[in-house]
Image (tube, rainbow, N blue to C red; front, side, top):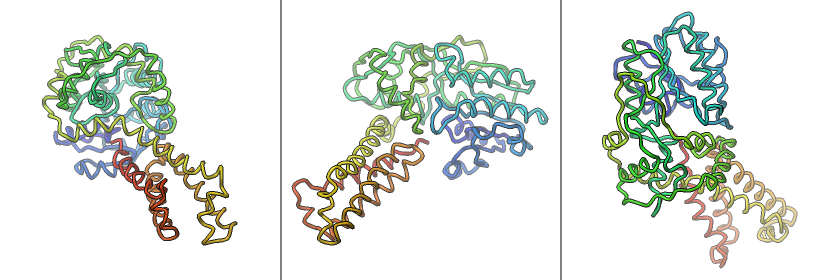
Length: 423
Protein backbone atom coordinates (compact mmCIF):
# COMPACT_ATOMS: atom_id res chain seq x y z
CA UNK A 1 0.00 0.00 0.00
CA UNK A 2 1.01 3.62 -0.48
CA UNK A 3 1.04 5.33 2.91
CA UNK A 4 1.51 9.00 3.80
CA UNK A 5 2.83 9.75 7.32
CA UNK A 6 2.49 13.19 8.86
CA UNK A 7 5.13 14.06 11.45
CA UNK A 8 7.30 11.20 10.23
CA UNK A 9 10.49 12.75 11.65
CA UNK A 10 9.13 12.70 15.21
CA UNK A 11 9.56 10.24 18.07
CA UNK A 12 6.46 8.19 17.23
CA UNK A 13 6.33 8.97 13.52
CA UNK A 14 9.85 7.73 12.78
CA UNK A 15 9.14 4.36 14.43
CA UNK A 16 5.79 4.01 12.66
CA UNK A 17 7.45 4.85 9.33
CA UNK A 18 10.16 2.25 9.87
CA UNK A 19 7.61 -0.41 10.82
CA UNK A 20 5.37 0.21 7.81
CA UNK A 21 8.36 0.23 5.46
CA UNK A 22 9.49 -3.08 6.99
CA UNK A 23 5.98 -4.43 6.34
CA UNK A 24 6.57 -3.79 2.66
CA UNK A 25 4.51 -0.63 2.18
CA UNK A 26 5.60 2.35 0.10
CA UNK A 27 5.94 5.09 2.71
CA UNK A 28 6.03 8.83 2.11
CA UNK A 29 7.07 10.87 5.13
CA UNK A 30 6.26 14.53 5.74
CA UNK A 31 8.38 16.78 7.93
CA UNK A 32 9.58 20.35 8.22
CA UNK A 33 13.25 19.35 7.97
CA UNK A 34 13.48 15.92 6.35
CA UNK A 35 17.10 16.18 5.17
CA UNK A 36 18.60 14.34 8.14
CA UNK A 37 15.69 11.88 8.22
CA UNK A 38 16.52 10.96 4.62
CA UNK A 39 20.02 10.01 5.73
CA UNK A 40 18.72 7.92 8.64
CA UNK A 41 15.79 6.30 6.82
CA UNK A 42 16.59 6.24 3.08
CA UNK A 43 13.82 3.71 2.40
CA UNK A 44 11.24 6.45 3.04
CA UNK A 45 10.21 8.94 0.35
CA UNK A 46 10.65 12.22 2.22
CA UNK A 47 8.69 15.38 1.46
CA UNK A 48 9.08 18.76 3.09
CA UNK A 49 5.84 20.23 4.46
CA UNK A 50 4.62 22.54 7.21
CA UNK A 51 1.16 21.47 8.37
CA UNK A 52 0.43 24.90 9.83
CA UNK A 53 0.36 26.22 6.25
CA UNK A 54 -1.75 23.40 4.83
CA UNK A 55 -5.16 24.57 6.01
CA UNK A 56 -7.06 24.36 2.71
CA UNK A 57 -8.21 21.16 0.92
CA UNK A 58 -6.26 22.09 -2.19
CA UNK A 59 -3.04 22.04 -0.16
CA UNK A 60 -3.49 18.26 0.21
CA UNK A 61 -4.72 17.17 -3.20
CA UNK A 62 -1.34 16.49 -4.79
CA UNK A 63 0.00 14.71 -1.70
CA UNK A 64 -3.04 12.43 -1.45
CA UNK A 65 -2.87 11.18 -5.03
CA UNK A 66 -2.34 7.43 -5.00
CA UNK A 67 -2.25 7.15 -1.20
CA UNK A 68 -4.19 4.31 0.42
CA UNK A 69 -3.69 5.45 4.01
CA UNK A 70 -2.68 8.58 5.91
CA UNK A 71 -1.14 8.28 9.39
CA UNK A 72 -1.14 11.46 11.46
CA UNK A 73 1.72 11.36 13.97
CA UNK A 74 2.15 15.14 14.02
CA UNK A 75 1.40 17.32 17.00
CA UNK A 76 2.65 19.99 19.35
CA UNK A 77 2.24 20.64 23.06
CA UNK A 78 1.65 24.38 23.19
CA UNK A 79 1.49 27.46 21.00
CA UNK A 80 4.79 29.24 20.53
CA UNK A 81 7.16 30.70 17.99
CA UNK A 82 7.60 27.29 16.35
CA UNK A 83 4.06 25.93 16.73
CA UNK A 84 0.50 26.96 15.89
CA UNK A 85 -1.81 24.39 17.48
CA UNK A 86 -5.05 25.51 15.86
CA UNK A 87 -3.51 25.42 12.39
CA UNK A 88 -1.48 22.21 12.81
CA UNK A 89 -3.77 20.01 14.89
CA UNK A 90 -7.21 21.20 13.78
CA UNK A 91 -7.39 23.35 10.63
CA UNK A 92 -4.88 21.27 8.66
CA UNK A 93 -6.65 18.04 9.64
CA UNK A 94 -10.07 19.32 8.64
CA UNK A 95 -8.61 20.36 5.29
CA UNK A 96 -7.08 16.89 4.93
CA UNK A 97 -10.41 15.18 5.62
CA UNK A 98 -12.16 17.36 3.05
CA UNK A 99 -9.52 16.61 0.42
CA UNK A 100 -9.68 12.87 1.23
CA UNK A 101 -13.42 12.61 0.48
CA UNK A 102 -12.76 11.73 -3.14
CA UNK A 103 -10.18 8.95 -2.71
CA UNK A 104 -11.36 7.68 0.72
CA UNK A 105 -7.96 6.65 2.19
CA UNK A 106 -7.77 5.15 5.66
CA UNK A 107 -7.00 7.90 8.20
CA UNK A 108 -5.17 6.90 11.38
CA UNK A 109 -5.07 9.69 13.94
CA UNK A 110 -2.56 9.42 16.81
CA UNK A 111 -4.44 11.43 19.41
CA UNK A 112 -4.64 11.58 23.20
CA UNK A 113 -7.12 11.50 26.03
CA UNK A 114 -8.87 14.82 25.54
CA UNK A 115 -10.89 15.02 28.78
CA UNK A 116 -9.77 16.10 32.23
CA UNK A 117 -8.04 19.11 33.79
CA UNK A 118 -6.24 20.05 30.57
CA UNK A 119 -9.19 19.30 28.28
CA UNK A 120 -9.93 22.94 27.51
CA UNK A 121 -6.31 23.89 26.83
CA UNK A 122 -5.39 24.36 23.15
CA UNK A 123 -3.31 21.14 23.03
CA UNK A 124 -6.25 18.86 23.77
CA UNK A 125 -9.03 21.11 22.50
CA UNK A 126 -7.54 21.11 18.99
CA UNK A 127 -6.96 17.34 19.17
CA UNK A 128 -10.59 16.85 20.19
CA UNK A 129 -11.84 19.05 17.36
CA UNK A 130 -9.89 16.99 14.81
CA UNK A 131 -11.01 13.69 16.38
CA UNK A 132 -14.69 14.66 16.31
CA UNK A 133 -14.43 15.85 12.72
CA UNK A 134 -12.76 12.60 11.67
CA UNK A 135 -15.39 10.48 13.44
CA UNK A 136 -18.14 12.39 11.62
CA UNK A 137 -16.40 12.49 8.23
CA UNK A 138 -17.51 9.11 6.90
CA UNK A 139 -13.89 8.27 6.06
CA UNK A 140 -12.50 4.89 7.13
CA UNK A 141 -10.53 5.75 10.25
CA UNK A 142 -8.86 4.73 13.49
CA UNK A 143 -8.27 7.12 16.38
CA UNK A 144 -5.52 5.85 18.71
CA UNK A 145 -5.18 7.36 22.18
CA UNK A 146 -1.87 6.14 23.61
CA UNK A 147 -0.81 6.74 27.20
CA UNK A 148 2.74 7.99 27.90
CA UNK A 149 4.86 6.50 25.11
CA UNK A 150 8.28 5.09 25.98
CA UNK A 151 10.95 3.78 23.63
CA UNK A 152 14.64 3.41 22.92
CA UNK A 153 14.76 7.12 22.15
CA UNK A 154 13.09 9.86 24.14
CA UNK A 155 11.29 13.10 23.42
CA UNK A 156 9.30 15.61 25.43
CA UNK A 157 7.90 14.05 28.59
CA UNK A 158 9.97 10.88 28.34
CA UNK A 159 13.13 13.01 28.01
CA UNK A 160 12.20 14.90 31.16
CA UNK A 161 11.63 11.65 33.06
CA UNK A 162 15.11 10.47 32.11
CA UNK A 163 16.59 13.80 33.16
CA UNK A 164 14.82 13.71 36.54
CA UNK A 165 15.96 10.12 37.03
CA UNK A 166 19.60 11.22 36.63
CA UNK A 167 19.26 14.05 39.15
CA UNK A 168 22.14 13.90 41.68
CA UNK A 169 21.48 12.67 45.24
CA UNK A 170 17.70 13.19 45.34
CA UNK A 171 14.72 13.13 42.97
CA UNK A 172 12.76 16.41 43.26
CA UNK A 173 9.30 15.80 41.79
CA UNK A 174 6.07 17.73 41.50
CA UNK A 175 2.93 15.56 41.43
CA UNK A 176 5.04 12.59 42.50
CA UNK A 177 1.99 10.45 43.28
CA UNK A 178 0.10 11.16 40.05
CA UNK A 179 -0.86 7.94 38.24
CA UNK A 180 0.82 7.23 34.93
CA UNK A 181 -0.04 4.61 32.32
CA UNK A 182 2.60 3.80 29.72
CA UNK A 183 3.23 1.67 26.66
CA UNK A 184 6.00 1.08 24.17
CA UNK A 185 6.32 3.09 20.97
CA UNK A 186 6.48 -0.30 19.23
CA UNK A 187 2.95 -0.98 20.51
CA UNK A 188 1.77 2.13 18.69
CA UNK A 189 3.54 1.02 15.51
CA UNK A 190 1.96 -2.44 15.83
CA UNK A 191 -1.53 -0.96 16.17
CA UNK A 192 -0.98 1.22 13.09
CA UNK A 193 0.33 -1.80 11.18
CA UNK A 194 -2.79 -3.78 12.10
CA UNK A 195 -5.03 -0.92 11.05
CA UNK A 196 -3.34 -0.66 7.66
CA UNK A 197 -3.36 -4.38 6.95
CA UNK A 198 -6.63 -5.34 8.64
CA UNK A 199 -9.91 -4.06 9.94
CA UNK A 200 -8.86 -2.29 13.12
CA UNK A 201 -11.10 0.76 13.24
CA UNK A 202 -12.83 3.05 15.71
CA UNK A 203 -11.57 4.91 18.78
CA UNK A 204 -9.08 2.95 20.88
CA UNK A 205 -7.13 3.69 24.07
CA UNK A 206 -3.67 2.12 24.16
CA UNK A 207 -2.01 1.48 27.54
CA UNK A 208 -0.39 -1.31 29.50
CA UNK A 209 -2.44 -2.87 32.29
CA UNK A 210 -0.24 -1.49 35.07
CA UNK A 211 -0.59 1.97 36.62
CA UNK A 212 2.54 3.51 38.14
CA UNK A 213 3.01 6.71 40.07
CA UNK A 214 5.28 9.33 38.56
CA UNK A 215 7.75 8.62 41.36
CA UNK A 216 7.73 4.90 40.52
CA UNK A 217 8.34 5.65 36.84
CA UNK A 218 11.27 7.96 37.60
CA UNK A 219 12.78 5.35 39.96
CA UNK A 220 12.42 2.73 37.24
CA UNK A 221 14.30 4.95 34.79
CA UNK A 222 16.99 5.63 37.39
CA UNK A 223 17.54 1.90 37.76
CA UNK A 224 17.61 1.56 33.96
CA UNK A 225 20.36 4.20 33.80
CA UNK A 226 22.41 2.17 36.27
CA UNK A 227 22.26 4.76 39.06
CA UNK A 228 21.86 3.94 42.77
CA UNK A 229 18.48 4.51 44.43
CA UNK A 230 17.71 8.06 45.57
CA UNK A 231 15.08 9.54 47.81
CA UNK A 232 12.08 11.22 46.18
CA UNK A 233 11.35 14.72 47.46
CA UNK A 234 7.78 15.79 46.73
CA UNK A 235 7.59 19.47 45.84
CA UNK A 236 4.47 21.58 46.10
CA UNK A 237 2.98 22.69 42.80
CA UNK A 238 3.64 26.32 43.73
CA UNK A 239 7.39 25.63 43.73
CA UNK A 240 7.20 24.57 40.08
CA UNK A 241 5.33 27.67 38.92
CA UNK A 242 8.42 29.87 38.36
CA UNK A 243 9.96 27.09 36.27
CA UNK A 244 6.70 26.74 34.32
CA UNK A 245 6.58 30.48 33.67
CA UNK A 246 10.14 30.41 32.35
CA UNK A 247 9.36 27.36 30.21
CA UNK A 248 6.30 29.10 28.75
CA UNK A 249 8.41 32.17 27.99
CA UNK A 250 10.97 29.94 26.30
CA UNK A 251 8.13 28.44 24.24
CA UNK A 252 7.31 31.89 22.90
CA UNK A 253 10.91 31.98 21.66
CA UNK A 254 10.58 28.58 19.96
CA UNK A 255 11.93 26.21 22.65
CA UNK A 256 9.66 23.18 23.20
CA UNK A 257 10.16 22.48 26.89
CA UNK A 258 8.18 19.64 28.54
CA UNK A 259 7.98 21.84 31.64
CA UNK A 260 5.44 24.20 30.06
CA UNK A 261 2.11 24.82 31.73
CA UNK A 262 0.14 22.43 29.50
CA UNK A 263 2.30 19.46 30.48
CA UNK A 264 2.18 20.40 34.15
CA UNK A 265 -1.61 20.67 34.03
CA UNK A 266 -1.87 17.23 32.42
CA UNK A 267 0.48 15.74 35.01
CA UNK A 268 -1.47 17.30 37.89
CA UNK A 269 -4.11 14.58 37.41
CA UNK A 270 -1.84 12.00 35.81
CA UNK A 271 -1.88 10.11 32.52
CA UNK A 272 -4.69 7.62 33.05
CA UNK A 273 -8.01 6.83 31.43
CA UNK A 274 -10.72 4.19 31.38
CA UNK A 275 -9.39 1.54 29.04
CA UNK A 276 -11.94 -0.22 26.86
CA UNK A 277 -11.19 -3.73 25.61
CA UNK A 278 -9.43 -3.44 22.25
CA UNK A 279 -7.68 -6.76 21.83
CA UNK A 280 -4.35 -4.94 21.53
CA UNK A 281 -1.53 -5.84 23.88
CA UNK A 282 0.64 -3.10 25.38
CA UNK A 283 4.07 -3.43 26.96
CA UNK A 284 4.75 -2.40 30.56
CA UNK A 285 7.32 0.28 31.37
CA UNK A 286 9.71 -2.23 32.94
CA UNK A 287 9.49 -4.53 29.92
CA UNK A 288 9.96 -1.62 27.51
CA UNK A 289 13.11 -0.47 29.29
CA UNK A 290 14.56 -3.95 29.80
CA UNK A 291 14.15 -4.65 26.07
CA UNK A 292 16.32 -1.59 25.37
CA UNK A 293 19.29 -1.66 27.79
CA UNK A 294 20.77 1.77 28.39
CA UNK A 295 24.24 2.80 27.35
CA UNK A 296 26.54 5.59 28.46
CA UNK A 297 25.01 7.82 25.79
CA UNK A 298 21.67 7.59 27.61
CA UNK A 299 23.30 8.67 30.87
CA UNK A 300 24.99 11.59 29.11
CA UNK A 301 21.70 12.65 27.55
CA UNK A 302 19.86 12.45 30.87
CA UNK A 303 22.48 14.53 32.67
CA UNK A 304 22.81 17.11 29.91
CA UNK A 305 19.08 17.55 29.29
CA UNK A 306 18.43 19.95 32.17
CA UNK A 307 21.87 21.55 31.78
CA UNK A 308 21.14 22.55 28.18
CA UNK A 309 18.82 25.49 29.01
CA UNK A 310 21.31 26.66 31.65
CA UNK A 311 24.13 26.55 29.09
CA UNK A 312 22.08 28.57 26.57
CA UNK A 313 21.00 31.19 29.12
CA UNK A 314 24.53 31.35 30.56
CA UNK A 315 25.99 32.06 27.15
CA UNK A 316 23.31 34.65 26.49
CA UNK A 317 24.06 36.44 29.77
CA UNK A 318 27.82 36.33 29.10
CA UNK A 319 27.49 37.93 25.66
CA UNK A 320 24.85 40.46 26.69
CA UNK A 321 26.96 41.63 29.61
CA UNK A 322 30.08 41.65 27.44
CA UNK A 323 28.30 44.09 25.16
CA UNK A 324 26.43 46.19 27.72
CA UNK A 325 29.16 46.79 30.32
CA UNK A 326 31.63 48.50 27.93
CA UNK A 327 28.83 50.79 26.75
CA UNK A 328 28.69 52.22 30.28
CA UNK A 329 32.29 53.42 29.90
CA UNK A 330 32.76 53.53 26.15
CA UNK A 331 35.72 55.93 26.22
CA UNK A 332 37.66 53.77 28.67
CA UNK A 333 36.82 50.57 26.78
CA UNK A 334 38.05 52.05 23.49
CA UNK A 335 41.44 52.94 24.99
CA UNK A 336 42.87 49.58 23.89
CA UNK A 337 42.50 50.63 20.25
CA UNK A 338 44.04 54.12 20.59
CA UNK A 339 47.63 53.08 19.81
CA UNK A 340 46.44 51.69 16.47
CA UNK A 341 43.78 54.15 15.25
CA UNK A 342 42.30 57.60 15.83
CA UNK A 343 40.04 58.23 18.79
CA UNK A 344 36.85 58.41 16.70
CA UNK A 345 37.64 55.15 14.94
CA UNK A 346 38.42 53.45 18.27
CA UNK A 347 35.10 54.62 19.72
CA UNK A 348 33.22 53.45 16.61
CA UNK A 349 34.91 50.02 16.61
CA UNK A 350 34.22 49.54 20.33
CA UNK A 351 30.58 50.50 19.86
CA UNK A 352 30.27 48.10 16.91
CA UNK A 353 31.75 45.17 18.83
CA UNK A 354 29.38 45.89 21.73
CA UNK A 355 26.40 45.78 19.38
CA UNK A 356 27.63 42.49 17.90
CA UNK A 357 27.95 40.96 21.38
CA UNK A 358 24.46 42.14 22.37
CA UNK A 359 22.94 40.88 19.12
CA UNK A 360 24.50 37.43 19.56
CA UNK A 361 23.45 37.25 23.21
CA UNK A 362 19.85 38.03 22.27
CA UNK A 363 19.73 35.85 19.14
CA UNK A 364 20.84 32.68 20.93
CA UNK A 365 17.66 32.82 23.03
CA UNK A 366 15.48 32.53 19.91
CA UNK A 367 15.33 28.86 18.87
CA UNK A 368 15.29 29.34 15.06
CA UNK A 369 18.31 31.68 15.37
CA UNK A 370 20.23 29.79 18.05
CA UNK A 371 22.41 27.69 15.73
CA UNK A 372 23.49 30.70 13.67
CA UNK A 373 24.09 32.70 16.85
CA UNK A 374 26.32 29.98 18.32
CA UNK A 375 28.35 29.81 15.12
CA UNK A 376 28.59 33.60 15.23
CA UNK A 377 29.85 33.43 18.81
CA UNK A 378 32.58 31.03 17.76
CA UNK A 379 33.62 33.23 14.83
CA UNK A 380 33.62 36.44 16.88
CA UNK A 381 35.47 34.76 19.78
CA UNK A 382 38.21 33.56 17.43
CA UNK A 383 38.36 37.03 15.87
CA UNK A 384 38.73 38.63 19.32
CA UNK A 385 41.51 36.19 20.25
CA UNK A 386 43.33 36.72 16.96
CA UNK A 387 42.98 40.51 17.05
CA UNK A 388 43.93 40.74 20.72
CA UNK A 389 46.98 38.53 20.21
CA UNK A 390 48.22 40.56 17.23
CA UNK A 391 47.46 44.05 18.55
CA UNK A 392 48.06 43.66 22.29
CA UNK A 393 49.61 40.27 23.23
CA UNK A 394 50.21 41.49 26.78
CA UNK A 395 46.47 40.94 27.40
CA UNK A 396 47.24 37.24 27.79
CA UNK A 397 49.12 38.16 30.98
CA UNK A 398 46.43 40.53 32.30
CA UNK A 399 45.43 39.48 35.86
CA UNK A 400 41.75 39.74 34.88
CA UNK A 401 42.35 37.42 31.91
CA UNK A 402 40.22 39.14 29.23
CA UNK A 403 41.62 36.82 26.56
CA UNK A 404 41.99 33.70 28.72
CA UNK A 405 38.30 33.88 29.65
CA UNK A 406 37.34 33.56 26.00
CA UNK A 407 38.63 29.98 25.89
CA UNK A 408 36.05 28.45 28.29
CA UNK A 409 33.39 30.49 26.52
CA UNK A 410 34.36 28.79 23.26
CA UNK A 411 34.15 25.36 24.91
CA UNK A 412 30.72 26.17 26.35
CA UNK A 413 29.58 27.33 22.91
CA UNK A 414 30.76 24.05 21.37
CA UNK A 415 28.83 22.16 24.07
CA UNK A 416 25.67 24.14 23.24
CA UNK A 417 26.08 23.37 19.54
CA UNK A 418 26.57 19.67 20.28
CA UNK A 419 23.31 19.51 22.27
CA UNK A 420 21.21 21.90 20.19
CA UNK A 421 19.37 19.37 18.05
CA UNK A 422 16.01 18.25 19.40
CA UNK A 423 15.48 15.32 16.99
